[in-house]
Image (tube, rainbow, N blue to C red):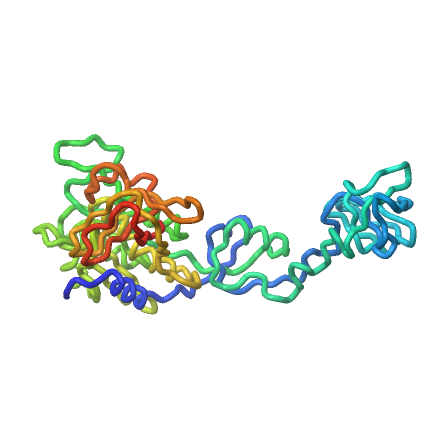
Amino acid sequence: MDMISASEAETLILSLVHSLQTTEEVTLDNASGRILARSVSSTLDFPYWDNSAMDGYAVRYKDLQKCDRENPKTLRIVEEIPAGIQPQKNIVQGEAARIFTGAVMPQGADTVVMQENTRRKGDRVVILQAPRDREFVRRKGAFYQSGNPLLGAGIAIGAPEIAVLATAQCTRFTVYQQPRVAIFSTGNELVSPGNSLKPGQIVDSNQYALRAFVADLGGIPLPLGIVRDRPEDLERTIENAIARADIVLSTGGVSVGEYDYIEEILAKLGGNIHIRSVAVKPGKPLTVATFERGDRTCLYFGIPGNPVSALVSCWRFVQPALKKLSGLSGDWQPQFVTARSRHDLKANGKRETYLWGRWEIVSGGYEFSLAGGDRSSGNLINLAQTNGLAVVPVGETAIAAGEKVNVMLV
């Protein structure tokens, strides 16, 4: 199987993914980050009733149409209405009610005069400027009418959506179950962060980085630890992983070395291998396989062990798959923007090259700064605070500082 392009790999991977259909009910307290499986509506209008958008005086517009500072209008204050109190009076000609932001409008009143345009005199208020008709009144149902769709299926629930659901008194709703992602690292040289290092050993950072990656996308990480380069151990772990998870992420063991057993084991266990390598740098070794397990499909990603390669592979290829699997609607592909590069960008031209760094908006446009230091795929130190990958296309070897470059947002 030949090395394929990044766009071909993305298209193929997304064609292998089918959104999860299993659902569950959640409450407002545990809804953050979940994906709505069914659209939500409410029996309430919003605003719930006509209310004031300003501290001031509830009045009848027709009483004040010709009012100004030269010809002020004096009204009698018949009531004070704080927020949360039901009005008791019906406003008639020549009357006003003192009202506060969010308070219910009294019957008869249709407009609010902000207090800055008034002068109080005991139980009278002098109106110094004519308001506009219905000014500073939030009308019942102006933002949402009961029975209409409120939030659609396939959206991620964040703080704004939780506020909307709470306001509509939707306290329970249906979401997709979270994708389960098994994660393990392979290699005789790996040790956990809490262990002391011996000569030749390497701390397994991938296990922790990928847990965070999965959790940030709303998945449930299933950490399986470090697996030594022994075929029997790898086979046992992979079999366990594909039985438990919707997606499996393994790091290492997918190149062409004598201890790279992953592909052979995947085939032995009945996996259908779709991708073996991708024309990108870093991250060329990429094994993608599927396992049919009854009525579900498990998607296997064997990604490189080098820390930068592992994360670039996840950002570029695993992230779209996880988004689609989760039930999220809309575009699953990574987002790219055009930015001005602050540095010279270099590549060998043979593969699509991703150079990590940071983007920011300057004077309304995107600018990209390359991370400092060595950009080896094994150097994860300058990966900290990365929020973008500048893309040097196949066939190009340099993009000069000041020129435009496509940047993948991460």
